[in-house]
Image (cartoon, rainbow, N blue to C red; front, top):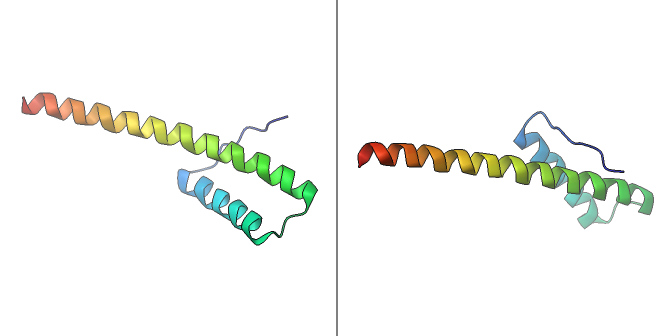
Amino acid sequence: MSSKITPKSLSAAFEELEKIAEEFEDETIDLEGGIAKLEKGLSLAAFLKKELSKMENKVVRIKEKYQEIDD
């Protein structure tokens, strides 16, 4: 069962993912909580990857648009 994560912003998603990573690094998570946090972290990572890919594509299109003007 995967839950859809839709944070308010990329920075909010990244901050939440960082907090989850810190909890794992500090080893402060129990097994049951760890599974839920792992799922949430993977969902946040997928969301960030998708959104960053969209931004990258937009930047490429903008660069191509202005390169055509310069040519």
